[in-house]
Image (cartoon, rainbow, N blue to C red; front, side, top):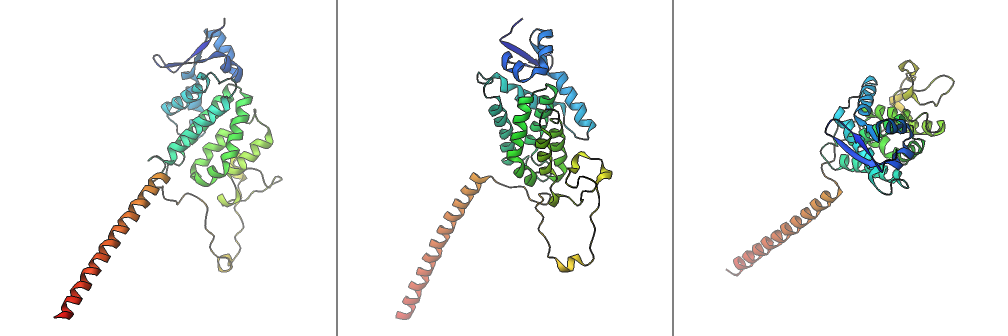
Length: 281
């Protein structure tokens, strides 16, 4: 039985609609469920599966956070152009999360790129669970285009979540793409460990901790080499203002400085007038 729309259920009273044909085309893993249920997707169970898996891997995401990201994911398939450009809608959803992190109070020393990271993680899980090769390639391509920023701006303690998200796509994207993506999360300057074994440049994030090796510590190294500035963001201060607000603050400071300069010049003129008057007497 064909349906123009399907219903994505997030509980007894929470549901949303999406176009059936792009969902079935890009998320083939949902086709049996849609056919068996008469055009419905149990997003609540999908969120539950993601919730328990990420917690087993040591991440702490609330069910509400996962459901919010899932709703944003399925909103991609509400647009009439969803069949032709679902990747652009997905990119926009992720970039909205990045902008929110950059220009809100949630971008601070502890949370890092929280909204951006959580949405990427849930999107990756959903794509993997629904066996979407096309969207997996698009998501990996999006990560690689933003990887330099992520690897230098994200908190080191949160890079594990990005790695877990990428590893969900392992069966849907080429191995070379996966390894290139993981390499951004574990560059040499971001770790105190060195690789060992037969693959000296393998990404360490996917290995057991016993695969890590402490680097050799040459004696007198500190006496011969100057201190190197760490690119890590662990000790960075959170930006107090975004660019537009900062520009406004600069304009206010310039205006105040001009007013103060005029007041100083006026006082200097008054002093000069008093001096000339005293000389006449």
